[in-house]
Length: 158
Figure 1 (cartoon, rainbow, N blue to C red):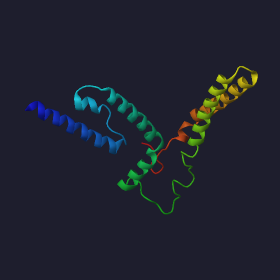
Figure 2 (figure 1 turned 90 degrees about the horizontal axis):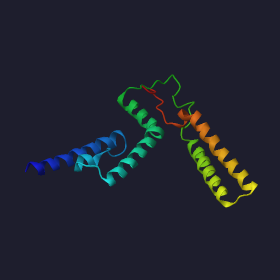
Figure 3 (figure 1 turned 135 degrees about the vertical axis):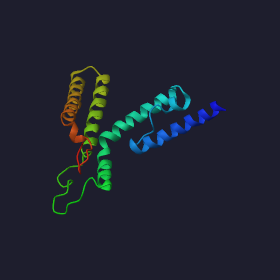
Figure 4 (figure 1 turned 90 degrees about the vertical axis):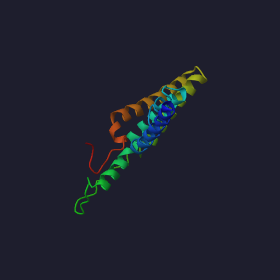
């Protein structure tokens, strides 16, 4: 009887962890299969990898707006009619991200295609050009990375 109840408790505990994690992080809890079954499974490793990548994206590019909403609803930020809005001079952090991503992916794709097509000087020059474009965009993103991230604007970071 105890083993059956313990199994139900583990499943309940894992489901509760998933719900809390969905609210807090936006993805399912990591290592949920370890809690449910007592061991790590291949499906669980894949699910954890997808959740980790999703968390990286959400935390870096989507979380600023959520934090602003939480600050406004909780009363941590109070609206002042006489001062300028914190959103007045800022640009949307994601406005340059699609362009930068497209340039990097396009540059690397064209570089690989031109390297595979032929062995003359024109293909090598094209490969070097597109590899340079991709490297330049990567350097710009690396230098100005914080501007690409979504940060809270009302109260800032702690």
